[in-house]
Length: 357
Image (cartoon, rainbow, N blue to C red):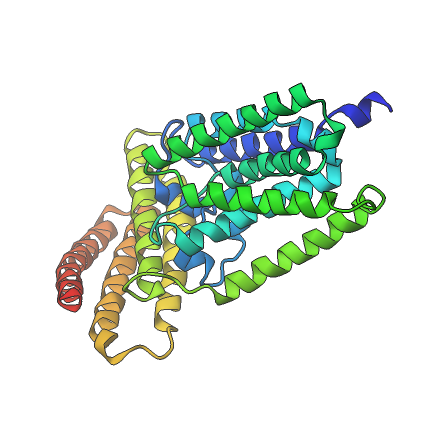
């Protein structure tokens, strides 16, 4: 066997992809140690109302995003330590295990995780790799020396117990994603190895399992319902609102420090604040069959989004206006719209409290 075939190139490529996405996070202003949920959401984090509301691609993108250097560092270290799994299964089978385990972890979060939390990270996929390793130990035990088998099994067990314990103690970690990825990884590994013809059918099985797994993922996305008391549109509104406000304030701070010109500030506000907000408002207005008890809340939500959007558009126009005399009316408009935002926000919060009674 050539040296190239004994190298876990898929593992290395996955580590590189995760690191590259972390660099994208940093380039978009995320903190090195603790990116905000809004920043992760904006880049493709798994947020139930959005993922189940048509943005299914978040299940894939969230697998390559992380909440800080420690998060990605631990995940990539664990993945590197499990690189032998690629050599045991082969590149294609290993890639299938990793992909399906990551998706399975995302689905598990949608099913039993915190419904209003943004989830991200390669943890589900990495746990799936260890699950695949466990399947190999279980089904190919006769091929491994007893001492080596026992040592490896204990090592995997310690890894799982330690990481699950950490998950239960750190609020931002989705334990459901870990467990879901582990189960899917074990199941995929077992399906790849079961039976006397497994080795001869390795490629066909890997492709078949991939198609089946992707199909089941699609069915899950289409059938899982968002959990929680409020309609999905309200949760989506909160996510987009928080992300937009955070991005605007961050850009304003950079502009005050001289890190952004007016033109750059205006471009960022248009692309990262106004456009996502417009799309969110369109989605709110397109919500079908609004229950009668929620009609007032939807009306207040529309008033609020209209005022907020008008304020941001006035701010953007202000950045494009060099004439001092013409800037004053825009400043006055911003003030009026901001006053309306505060007023409607209070009415919106009051209506929410009334509905919870």
